[in-house]
Image 1 (tube, rainbow, N blue to C red):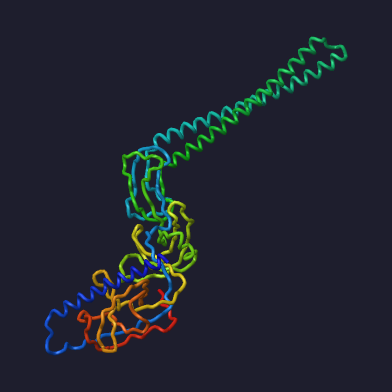
Image 2: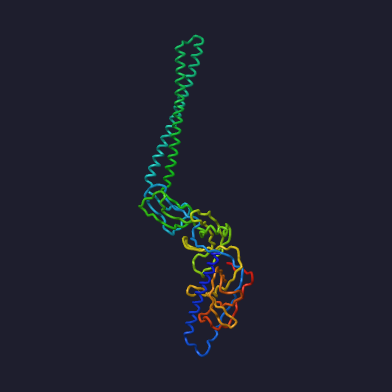
Length: 405
C-alpha cells in the first residue's frame, strides 16, 4: 500500500510539473499580441494510442572480449634478449615472440647432461661388478660343494671345510653389495636423466611462442628488462569470433539461458541498429556482487575492437500495455509530452509518463487514453493550441500485435 501511494504521489507531482510547464508556455504565447487573422493550419501526420502486446525486456552494458586471451609470461628469471613483435602484429601458433638470455639455463642443461653421462657410466660399472660378484659366488659355491663332499669322505679336513664356508659367505655378501650398488647407480642415473629433462625443458623456456593464431593486443616488455615468472610480457588475443560479456543481476536469472536469442548493439548511439545473436554461456552467480556473467557471440559480420563498449537486450514474456508511436513523444525540460489532436482539430500538449520502448512504439504509463489521436514527428511550428490538418494517418497497430526486435 505504501509503494502504491508513493507511485500515485510521484504521478501527481509529475503531472503537476508538466501542467505548470504547459501553462507557462501558454502564458508566453498569449503575451504576444495576436494578429487579426487566425494563423494558418499546420499539416501533420497522426497516429493513435493503442493497447498492444509489448515484450518485456532489459538492456545491459558490456565489454567486447576476444574468444580467447593469453598472457605471455616467463617461467624463469632471465634478462629479455629480444622482443620480436609489437602490438597489432598478427601471429601464428608456435611463432617465437620473446627471446630470453639463455646462457644460464644452457649451462644448467649442459651440467645436467654431464651428470647424466657420469651416472650412466657408474650404472654400467655397477652392472660389471654384479657380473664379477656372481662369478665369484659361483666359484665359491662349487668349491664349497667339493670340500663338503670330500669332508664327508674324510678326505678333507674340518679347517678346509670352514674355509670353503667362509669363502661362500663372503661371495654371497659381495654379490648382495654389488646388486645394491647397481640399484643405487640406476636410481642416480634416473635422477640425472630427470634433471637433464628438466634442464632441457627450462632451456625451451628461453623462447616464448604464440599459443594460437591471433593478434598481439598489448606489449609491456622491451629488450634489456628482467623477465620474472608471472609478469605478463605480451597479451595475445585469438583470431576469430569475439563475444560481448555482460553482467546481470541475480533477479534476471530466469530471463537468460544458453542458446537463447538476444540482441546486441556495439555503441550507445540510439540510431544504431540491434543485431540478433545468441547466448553462448551463462556463468554462475557471484556471491559477493549477486550478479552473473552472460557471454553473447558476435555475428561474423560484426567487427569491434576488444575492450569497446556494447549493449545487450534480453526479451521476456509480452504484456498488454498502452503505447504511443515512438516518434510522437516530445521531450522538453526533462519532461515528456505528446500532442493530442481533439475533435476541434487543435493540438494540445499533453504530459505523459513513458516506460519501455521498442523500435516503433513507446509504452505510456499515464497521461493519455486508448484511441487518442497524437501527432507523429510534430513540426517545430506546432505549439499548444495550434490548428492542424491531418495530412496522413499512420496505420494503427492491430490489437494483440507485438512489436519485437
